[in-house]
Amino acid sequence: MSKSVSVKQNLFKITFPVFLDIALVMLLGAVDTVMLSRYSDDAVAAVGLDNQLISLVFLVYQFVSMGAAILCAQYFGAQQRMRFIQICGLAIGINTLLGVLASGVLYLWAEPILTAFGLRENLMVDGVRYLEITGALSFFQALSLTFTAILRSTGKTVLPMLATVAVNILNIAGNYALIFGHWGCPAMGVEGAAWATGGSRIVAMLILLCFVPNAWQVTEKRILPHKAVRKSINYFKPFPRNELSNLFKIGIPAMSEEMSYCLSQFTITYFINQLSTEALTTKIYCATIITFIQLIGVSIVQGGDILVGHYVGQLRYRAAYLLGNYFFRVAMILTLTIAALIAIFGRQLLGFFTENENIIRLGAWIFVIDWFLDIGRVKNIFACGTLRAAGDAVYPVVVGVIFQWTVAVGVAWILGIPMGFGILGFWIAFCLDENLRGIILMRRWHSRRWQGKSFAV
View 1 (tube, helix red, strand yellow):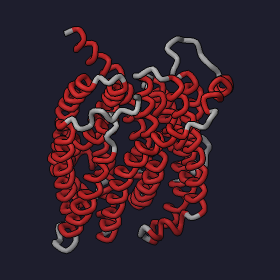
View 2: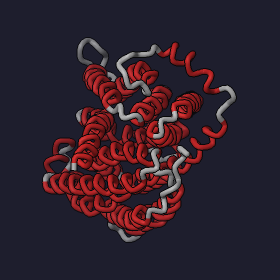
View 3: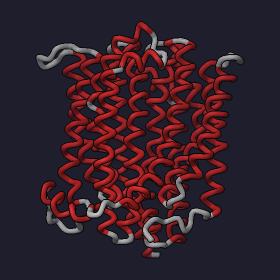
View 4: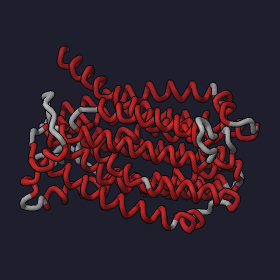
């Protein structure tokens, strides 16, 4: 009994800071939406499309950080210090290169990219400027994602949370000053929101950089960054090709599934954009609120996956399985409770964003559909994350790609456009996609075919 209580306490200790960290990261984007909604609905639509595109770029960065998080958790659990440091160094180096490349592309080709993705002409000026600024500064997010993954893998979930707290304070203050022109600053509108968001991400990276050299340390003794680099340099002689291969074996499938999902959502956003600016704005507002429904499930799963990775690294498969089942039940109960409250009070929530009655009416129905969608979504979040933590990274990709494009995109287009159900038809298709995938991936988890796939052997 004491072991069970200890594990649950450890899960809460890890999960609660992850919950706050993810909530604050989501708040970072939501703050722009809320504050720009006081500026204009068109600004929200332009920035919403930009943020979806930037999310795609962040997924490219995350393919390295997700792989690093899984491998670091397994190596930390198995007490393999050298392999842990090698993965950290490789992840930081690769994401530095990817960050420089992606930032340059987004800055130099912002307008052609947004034109290709169908941004309406009346939204183009704001959309281009926001993407130029936040895209150019996305390099710092590449490093932040890597540093956060390393720290979380060792159970140090409080440190990324503290960095995110500081970032949100700066972002809110920056938005207030630069969007509307307070405290002697010019009123820059959308451009001001971009500078506030980009600047706060730079601060986050600098804070996390101070913590990363001590990720392995279990004592209070701290190591300065330059000393940590000198101390670890011998671990990369000769170059750790096997660890690089392991990083790609985990990272590429993980990124592929996430990238497929994000691209499918971007394609659907393109279809919705063809309906009307009002439909696109409805989607942006609803998606902003729904991300907070996902928050509970995502944070519990991410916190639990750290412990699952530790157990898999120790080859304690039964403990990993039982723990996974426990935090899945908790995530499902809490998520559906929050989703029910959102469905009940949906009109009031949307009224905070806009006075447009059509947006409020459609959004309220979307929240009702989304309650049923969340049953499948929690299963997918849990199964994808936990199977990856156990080393079974390819299976979720295959299932995800098939259903995301045949159901989430194909059926959504049929229901939404030819059959005339509009944005509600799209959400019905999302619901069908999430639940079908959830059933299949949960069967994989319960089959335990992921056992024996640990990299820490």
